[in-house]
Image (tube, rainbow, N blue to C red):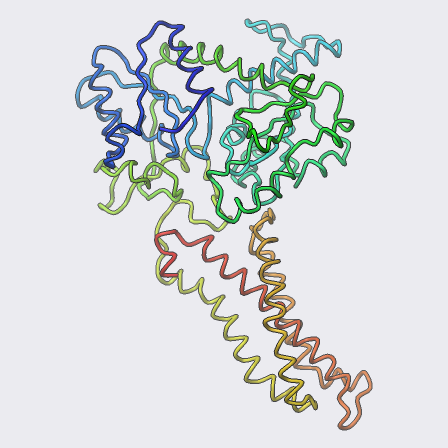
Amino acid sequence: MENSTRTKESFLNAAKFHDVKVNIFDCQTSSFLKSETITDTVKMLVGYSPGGRTTFVIRSKLEGVCRWLEFAMCKYAQLHGIKKPIFINAGDGSHEHPTQELLDQLTFVERIKRLNREAGGSPSGGYSPIGIELNDFHGIHVALIGDLKNGRTVHSKANGLRVFDNVKVDLIAPGELGMPEAYTERMRSLGYDVRQFPSLEEYLDQDDVAKIWYFTRLQLERMTDDQRERSAILRRAVSFDASTMMGKLPDGCKFFHPLPRDSRFPTIPFEIDDTDLNGWDEQSRNGYFLRIVLLRGIAAAGPSEVQFDTDRRCGNPRCVSNDVNGQREVIPAMMKDSAVLMSCCLTAEYREMTDDDEMAVDGSRRPLWWILLLTLGPFGVSFGFALQFALLTPFGMKLGISETMSSYLWLCGPVTGMIVQPLVGRLSDQCQNKWGRRRPYALGGTIVLLISLFLIAWSLDLGVLLGDRGADHRWATLIFVLSFWLFDASNNVLAVVFRALISDTVPDSQLSLA
C-alpha cells in the first residue's frame, strides 16, 4: 500500500527462508482504486486462503491500520469460524515503524557490545542466550537527527529504547520538524534523559555528544507546502558537514540511518560511506535476520487481541478511519450513533498531539459555543484597532499632534503588522514550550498591550512628572506616540496568534465555520 525497498525485500526473503507461500498485493492495480475499504480487501484475501493462518505484512500511509484490522478481523474470523489472521505493522504513515525499531535495537546492542569490548568492559550478571552481555543493555546515549516530526522510525523509539536501563536521548531538529510533544513526554515518563537542539552545529558546540547517531531523511511527501519551500534551510540544520564537523565527533562514533538517503541532498554525505562512521550498511543487513526471527516468533505466538475503549472519531486526519479507503463500515456495537467512528492509532498507548497542545486529539466536533468563544480573540483584536482609530486620534490632536502627523502615525499599524506577524508566526510555529506554541506569545502580547494602554491613558500625567507645563505636552506626546506603536505591535502579535490558534485547535471539518 506504500512503496518500499528494504522493508519489502527483507520480509520477502525472510518469508522465503521459512519456505512459506508469499503473495504481493499491489493496491495500484486493485479495487482500492474503486474506493474499496481495506477491511473488505483483507476479508477477501483471508477468504482465499482458508486452510491455514494468514500473516499480513502491511506498509501503509493509513495510520493505525494494523490496530484496526486486528480488531475488525477478529469479528470476521469468529463469525465464519476461520483462523484469525496476523498483522505486522511495516510502517503506518507518520505514526510508527515497529519492525524497524526491532532491527535498530539489535544494531544498537551490537554496537554497544563492541564499545564495551573496546573499553575493556566486563559483563555484569552473565550472558544472554544469544551471546550479548547483559551489561550491553545497561545504558545508551543516542542522538536522533532529522525530520523527527514526520519520521515514524524515531517515533517508535519512544517505547523501543526501554530495553535499555539508562537512556539518554538528544533530539536534533529545527522546531517545526521537532519530535511531537506526546513522544517526548512518553520518553520522559519512562525515565529517559531528553535534550533538544535546533541544529547539528549547536549540538556539536557542547561537550556531551552521543556516540550513536540516528539520522532520518526529510519526509517531503508528508510536509506542508510552506515547509517544502524551506526544505533547503531545514535540511542544512540536520546535515552532517564532514569538512567542519568531523573533528568534533567523539571516538567510536557511528552513524545509522533507516534509509533511503536522498541522492541529491543526503543528510549523511556520500564521502564518508567508506569510513568507520558507516553503521547503516550493517543496520540494513540486520533487517533480514531480524525479520526471519520475527516471522517465526509471531507465527508461533499467534495473533494478539486488540481492544478499543472509545467510540469517537479519530482526530488524526491520516488515520485509517478518516481515509477514503479506510474503515467506513462501522461495527454497531462500537456506536452511539451512526455519525461516530472509533479512534484508532491515537488512543493505543498515548495520544499524539498533532499540532498544538490544545488540539482536539479525540477528533470530536467542537460545539458551536466553543468555536464562538475561540473567535473572541480575533474579534477583540479587530475591536481594539477600531477603538484605537475612534478614540486615540482625537486624543492625539488634543496633545498637539496635527492631522498631517496623525496620518503618519497611523502607518504604525501596517508597518508593525508587516514585521511582527510573519516573525511571530514563524517563531510560534517553532516554539516547544510546555504551555504550547501559541499561549506564550498570547500571554506576552497581552501583557505588552496592557502596558501600552496604561501608558496612553496616563500619558498627560506622566508628561507632567517629566516636566510638561501648561500647553507644552512634548513629553506626553512622546509617551503617547511610543505607546501607540507599542499598542499596534502587541495587537498584531495577538492577531497572528489567535488566527493560528483557530487552525491548530479546530477539526478540519469545522475550519470553514470557524
